Each structure stands twice: as structure tokens, then as C-alpha cells.
Image 1 (spheres, one colour):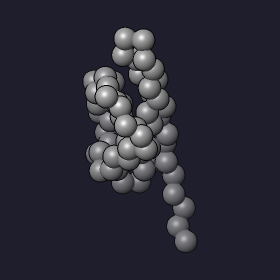
Image 2 (cartoon, rainbow, N blue to C red):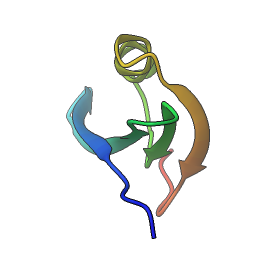
Image 3 (cartoon, rainbow, N blue to C red):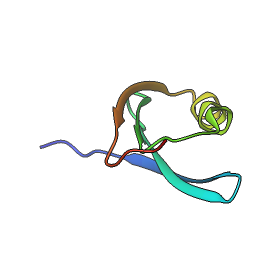
Length: 66
């Protein structure tokens, strides 16, 4: 079985008095990324994807936000 290397980015995103944590996982070999629990401030998410030259392929929502 091959070895896998991933980078995990934790983003603490605020909206008014609300705080949400979302996570970006980037496969170092393929540059594919998974986004977990996005809620708001998509510019911050986009900036990490651009900085890492990653292609968003997966979004996982574990709970809802308004």
C-alpha cells in the first residue's frame, strides 16, 4: 500500500458574533482538496486553495448553517 501525505488547514471564520471552523485537506501528490464544513467567508477559503495551488474536488457538510 502506498504512502499518502496530506496538509490540513484549519480556518476559524467569523460572521457577526458567530464563529465557525472549517478544514481544508490537500493531497500533496495530486493537489486535490477536500473542504469540510464551509459556512461563510469564501474569500478566506479560496485564498488557501489558491495559495496551495489546490483543486477543490470534495465538500463534506457535517451539520447545517443558516
